Structure formats: C-alpha cells, structure tokens
Image 1 (cartoon, rainbow, N blue to C red):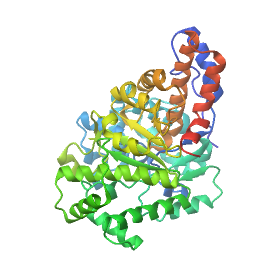
Image 2 (cartoon, rainbow, N blue to C red):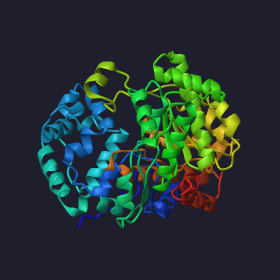
Image 3 (spheres, rainbow, N blue to C red):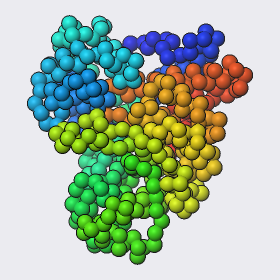
Image 4 (tube, one colour):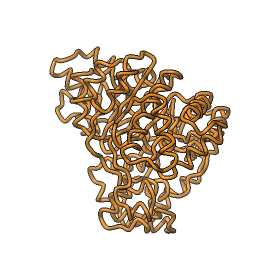
Length: 465
C-alpha cells in the first residue's frame, strides 16, 4: 500500500535557527491534525462513485488553471493541452508540461504539484523532458490501483470535513450516496447561486426560469425569493453549512419590495441597463445575507476577480481557462448597506475573501474587529502561497487577532494538492507565531493554544461545524 512520505522537517520554516526551533515545535503539534476543508471544488461524484482518475494529465494539468495559465504565457496553445473540448493525447500534454516544468520554479503551483508528485504519488526523480514518459507511466499505473482512488485518498489524507460547491438545482444525490457509504469523514454541499442572482451571467433568464419551474413558484420577486429559500432548505437537509458567492465587486443595495419587484421584471425582460443589473445583484447579495440570518447558513463572499478577461480565449476555451485576474475592491462602502441591516446579528457569519491585499489591514481586519458577524477569509487564489500567507497574518493580526479569521481554506479542484496546501498554511502559521514568541510579543503557551485552535476548532466554529 502507498504510504505518504514523511515531510521534510524544516521546509518553509524560518531561516533564523532560534525562531526555526520554536516554529518546528509548533508545527509538529499540528502537522498531522485532521484536515478541515469547508470550502473547495472537488466534484462530489468523485467520492460518491469512487471514480478512477482518468490519466496523469487530466489529474494534474488540464483542469488546473494555475498550470494552464503559466504554460499559455510561455506560448503553449491551450488547445494542445486539451482545453475547451479540444482533443489532445494525454501523453503529449504531459510531455509539454514536463518540458516546461522549470517555469513553475518558485510558484505556489510548482510547490503543490511537487508535493503531490513526491508525497502522494511516490515520484522519486526530477520531472524533465527526458523523464516525462517514465514519470507518466509510473503515475498512470498508480492511478489504476485501489490505493489511488478518491475514497482511499480522502481517508489517507486525514480529511475530516470536505465541502464541495454545487448548483442550487442539483438534486445532491451524490451527497446522499456519500453520506450512506460509510466514508470516514463528512462531505458537505455548498449552495453557489451566482448564475441565478447575477443578470450579467450567461443564461441568467433561463436559469431563473428553471429555478421557478423546479419549485413551482410564480415569476414575481417574492416567488423568486421563496424559490431560493426552498433550494437552500434542500441543501441544509443534505448537510450544507454555507453558501458561496463570487462577485467582481463587494457591492450591496437595500431597496423596498416594490422597487425590487419592478427591477426583477426588468432584468427578466432583458430591458435593464448595466447599472440596474448591478443594483439588482447588489440587492440580491443583501437578500442572501437576510436568508442566512433566517436559516443559519454561513455566507462566504469571494470578491475582486474579473472573470474571462480575454474574450477570444473565453469563446474558444470557456471559463476557467486561466484569464481571471484580481482587481481593487472596496468592502467598507460596498457592504455598508448589508452590514447596516445584519452586521450585528449574532447568528449571522459572513466570511469575506479578497485578492486585493491592500484591503486586509485597511478594511477587512478593522471590520472583523467590530462586526460580530464578519470573519476574514484566508488568503485565496493568487494569494494562497507562503509569502502571501505570511503577509496576510501580519496585516490582519494587529487589528483582529487570530480569532476573527476563517481558518485555512484550500479552495481547490486539485484533489491531490489538498494535503500540501493545508501543510503549507500550518508551516506558515508556525513560523509567524514563532517570530512573535522569539520577539517576546506572546508566550509559548499562547502560541501553542493558537496553532492548535486555528487548524480545527476555529474553522469549525466559523462554519458552524
């Protein structure tokens, strides 16, 4: 049976010997603690059906936009990687990847993949153009074994909780099958209603029509809201603890029911202006907060990404093809209407994720240190890397301490990278805490209590687990 190799003892820990010794002790307290992953994108069907992974390229290259983006920047055609329905020989895709492996040196993607290759897949040689076929054959053979099926890996990784991301009209049959399968760990659905809330989403009108038809609700604003409530209840019955919302800007609007109904009819008819569509989405984000106050689902808001930046690439290859980019955000003014209404509700948990690092110390940490409902989401997407994680801790802790964070969120489709991502966060936090101890800013007992808390109890509290 495959065994995970013991991780290199001091990787990512501080270079200063005294601080490193403290960090090592802190890290070893939590190195093998169970993984709590309350937000991610692993398909539930993988675990429900225990499907065999297709091939090394599909597993590690084609479906990872971190990887395809950097390859594309070096001149690799996305069609040659099999994106957008284009046919590509998996071995040729792997050869392309191996020939360009040097591009990933120093990147978070390179780190995750190296960890997956060595610790999970037992690859014991450097990936190069010359070793590409040998490594491919090794992984391909391994993927055919029971030890490398999703359920075996789930248990081997020590995952206690894993949340997926699901469409509101999903019947959640896969989750029902997982729940009754005896898997050692919880797999929870997450309500992701973006395409039913944002009039700028492709197929918005058809999506809303399907929502209303499925729930038998009238095409009025109140009928629309009740349809969303009904589907949220369906998710709660299948174990959901949170909703997730991806928006370009953290913007909310409070309006009365009559105004909202008129606007709803405009967006359904296709006559609403861009500004009115923006207002509608802003009001619906506020309505989602209202529903979370009512039903207790944690609300996560991932803001600040411009999706599908290059139109021709989107046309040829679809979404998640590597050209989604961060932009500046304004949480303080944008969320004020929502927080005026619900910010002091004790049962309301609002976890805010940003890719604009400037908001950590300027906006999110101060907001979380006042509003009992607000938690600062962990470094996300372009920021889920060691140096960015350390900057996050420095930026947030002085205002909000450690208690107002979400705990680490891996936010990944790359199943094999989950242990490496959580391990990176644990090592980074150990290093940060060790520096505070070495500088006399906190005691060692406090540091031990904090690192024990942030890997398990804290995300369980924030996500009501």
